Length: 291
Image (tube, rainbow, N blue to C red; front, side):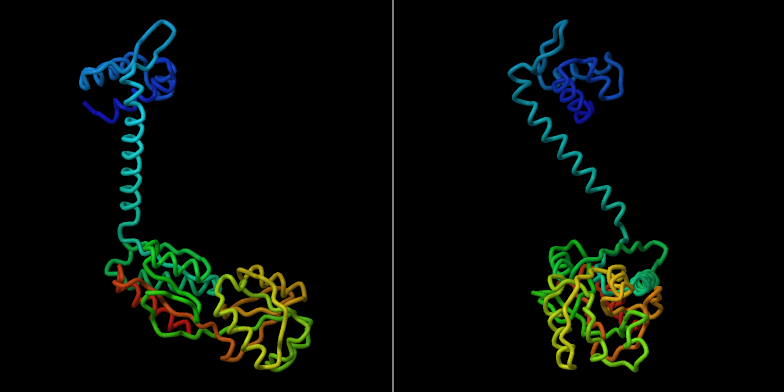
């Protein structure tokens, strides 16, 4: 006898209070449902339900066993779901990236990870984009195999690669004087800085603030979690922003080469021991190619 199947019969009848309604819920006819509950009762040696012309009621034994049946079924469903995830994630690599990496850079990382696999066609790369603080937590808890995060950042006990500096472009309103001048941070006066909120990476945000102040600029900051938000603010004529995308283009936006001091500083982090050491190494190599 299929115990789980017959437990589903019992739970459905108990919750519906009627064999006909339970049969509709289960997508079956009433006779095999009734027979299935009887087989379950015979196997257990107890009567679970009392039947009448008006429906069914739980016996004392049935009322006691119903919560246990629900627990067993929930556990079986969780088991099946976990197996499904294992099946789907077989050969999968789970990486995290910060939003400061552009779409082209992320696509390049994914392609590199697949190319580095013994069987590239069999490797699936699952990418999550989140603030550094969340990525660090996800790697530490095992939800991600590794991640690209801001530097500097608090990393706890995670292992890390050396720092990689990725060049950034300065985005300014097309009609702003800074668009026509040679690169100068001071030329950005009067514009706010559209960048990721400080909560996304406190230390990295503070480093940007210090870098700008050291060069004579103390702007206000406009939260811009991603490139779309930053581009919109720049196109509106109110802000400047930084982008790692070498081909970024947008109406109303001028692109100016920025100095090395404004490069995006990142590193790869992973737990110790690394769940997939080859992946961490391949990710670091791919990241350096972006620099």
